[in-house]
Each structure stands twice: as C-alpha cells, then as structure tokens.
Image (cartoon, rainbow over all chains, first blue to last red; front, side, top):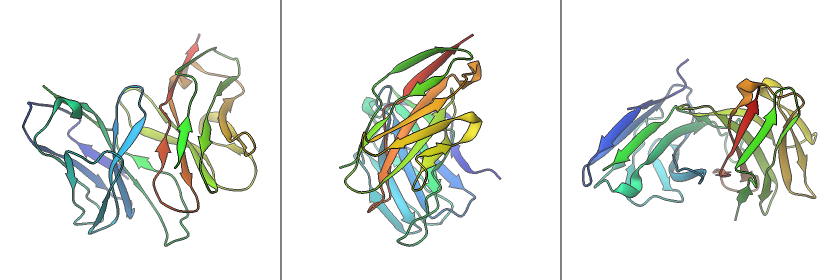
Length: 117
Length: 114
C-alpha cells in the first residue's frame, strides 16, 4: 500500500521556469490537497479537490494551478516560478462520506522541496 | 474563521520525564482536532484526533491529548518521553459544522534530551 506518492523529492528551478509537481494516491480517497510549508509558518492550503473534475482555491493559490482528471492524481502546476515559491510542498488525501463526513485524518506524501533561484 | 495557536516554538524535555505540547484553537462550531508529527525529511503522520466523546483521547506511540472546551485547548501529552519522540508537532483544527479543510498551527519542535 503506497499511500500518497509525490515526485520529485527535490527540484531547483530558475526564475520564470515552470514545472508540475506530481501527486498520486492509491487509497481511493475522494479529497486531495496541496499545502506548502514555510519555516515557522505551518502549512498553508494552496488548492484542494473534493473529487475528480472538482477543484477549489485554498488560502494561497496565486501562481499555481491544479487539475483532477482522475480520483488518483492531483498534479500541481507552477507557471513562471518566483523565489517566493521556494518551499516544501505536501500533497495529502482524505476520505469523506457525503455531507456527514467521517473524518479519518489526512494521509500526507513525503513532500517536494522546491528552490527557485 | 478557524485558527490554531501553538504558543511554544520549542519544547525541551529530559528523557523519561513527562512532556506537554500546547495547542489552543478557535472555531465557531464544533471542533475537529488533530495532532500530527513530522520527522526530518518526511511527511506529516497522524497521531490522534478528537471528534466527539471522551475528552481524553489516546493515540499512537503512547501519546494522548486532552480536549478542554472551556479553555479551547487540545494539549498533547506523554507520560514518559523518549529521545525518538524528538520531532516537529502540528496541531490542526476544522470546524465540524461546515467546510472540509483544516487549519494547521505553526508547529512546535520537541527535543528530548538523553
């Protein structure tokens, strides 16, 4: 059982370049999330998805885009990378049932450390 | 709006002594409260949660947390700390009445000294 898999683990980008952070989960979770972790700042929600074909903005969406074409995959796209996007990015997933959500907590990937220079 | 505070950036404790990592929260409805632990270069791992029921909840690795509604707190505790407990601990809250997303605290770094 792989859980949540993120690739790559590390990446250095130049200012203005673009890249896609990959996230895949094999638990049939309907909810998926992207967070960024900055030192001393906790985790900030970038985007989330409640199911295939449905995405919504989180707290810090500017400079990012997402798509959710399948239940398993939730890639995060960075266009025109900026130094302010230097961070550690975590993908997570969870299971929710209808409107009376039984929440089992998030399962996190191991993270992608991104540096923009 | 939901918010979480972890008032201590760093907690140091000697091995074998009890430890407490503090968390206070603010939500308008019923809180869902979680603790996660992060080891170096790893993702966050679930420790325990409070949704409803007993105010004292027990989780992984001997950790427990006490929900105190009047003080809006959810402090993480362990009776006897191990060096291997040294990690970054995050408290998270979600308003149970609406929404899906959690708000995470800034984290508290726990160092257990041998």
